[in-house]
Length: 88
Image (cartoon, rainbow, N blue to C red):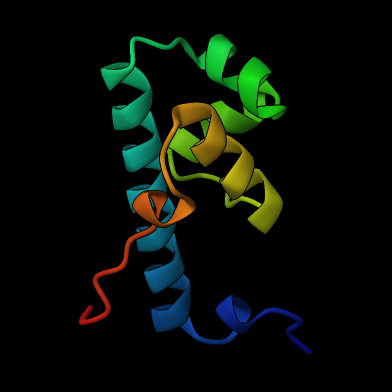
């Protein structure tokens, strides 16, 4: 029996992949706009660089707490990292 919704609902899995990509692209854009390296953001936020790489590429989601840690390191509210277009 599937344990995650994405395992039995391809549309939902695709939607989550889109959200991961959007959040990752936003983090990358904000990081670059601030002239930060991945290493610097990783050190300031407390995540590993490998996690940050995967997040920026949309290959990995984030724990709620890490989202706030990254937002804090970037100097933005966590809501700015989220795809809040609720119409899609």
